[in-house]
Every structure is written in structure tokens, then in C-alpha cells.
Image (cartoon, rainbow, N blue to C red; front, side):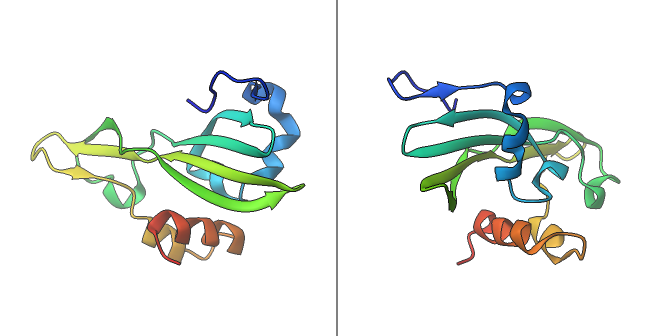
Length: 130
């Protein structure tokens, strides 16, 4: 997903990534799993997908995971003169009884008091706010 065939592309696993987790916004791993990383020479790409945990505000419903919404790309602060991109896959949930689909309410997460300002900025971008 994050890799393509090319000369400067370097793919490493999560376990080999180790200290690279410090490039991720603080608090993001509470909601997302790190799935891949690519060093594209002049920029880095981090792939994240939302964890398969039913959001607290939706636990009263009979939900099953129905895959993901289309992937979005967010540009983050540069690291060592390299642009950083996050490819994000947000999970989609479906109510077994009604067929209605749901997703995590990121506004509720952003309004929470336990998140860092860094993660708050990330959520603003995820929600499409300038």
C-alpha cells in the first residue's frame, strides 16, 4: 500500500521501525494501528488504519466492521527536511439490525481532554478543518 516499485523506496516492518514511532502524533496509536512505512527519498509515508474496536459511543448498537472508507492522505510537519504523509484508513461499522453504517465520531475524540495538541491538530486535518 505505501510502497511502490522504485529506486529510492525503502520498506521496513513495524518491528524494525522501532524508534520511528516517535514521528507519529502523540496519542494516535490509541485509535490507529501502524501498518507500513516507506522512505521515498524526499518524503516519508506512514500508513495507519483505525483499530477494530467499536467506539465507546456506539457500543450499545449491534455493529460489525465492514471494512474501511476510502483512504485519505494528510500532510504533517516535515521531519529532517522530509515531508511526512499519513495515509489513513478509517473503519466503517454496520448495524446488523438496521443496515445503517457508522464511524467513530472524531469530533468527540477531538473534544476530549486527554489528547495532546499535536493529536488535536491531526484530528482537525482528519475532519477537514483548516
